[in-house]
Image 1: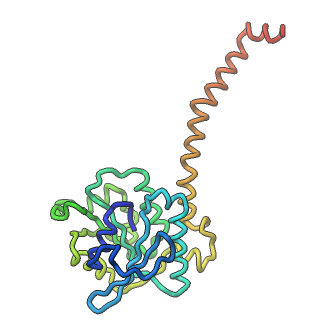
Image 2 (image 1 turned 90 degrees about the vertical axis):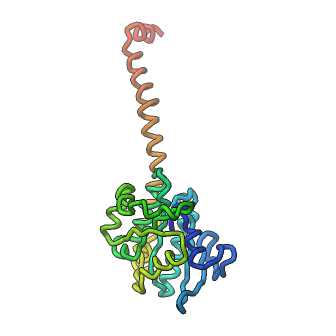
Length: 244
């Protein structure tokens, strides 16, 4: 997972040794969530590629529901995730609201209990040789990943090599845990909109409308109301109104 153009495709390419278009695709449960089959050191791995969490479609519902459906289906088939890779391009100095929302959505989707299964992967797609010059811990502090890191998530560097990518995967070992969203949907039988991630998504969708409503009340409705009250108190207006 990760924001759009944060290096997740490149990360998967390094793991498989192929471009995504040439990788053996197991299946496509939905239009947006895809599984890729690969082997390493005699062990089979299933890599799952999801749409960018800061993609407008994700917050609008289509991609978010696809991700949720995939997580629900795999949990019902007794398949547990070994880990979640969340990529972030550290050369991107901007941290716009959409990126903040994508990371917050990740937190609500995973929950704190399986946070130790999450790797916050710092990527530098075009300048990998300079990666060591960046302080990963400092970056994670600056973009406010602290609460998730305290829960167990681990920030790591990706040096844009196959060995580096597999080192991150192998570091997850074989511990498997369910994500919060999976437990909410399957065990607690919650509707998607009632889950922590679902509520967060709705809040982000409603927020702009709430802001627009506040702007309208502050800059249009209240000034017009105050002006009308002043006009109503003018003596000449009262006299004219009475005469009419």
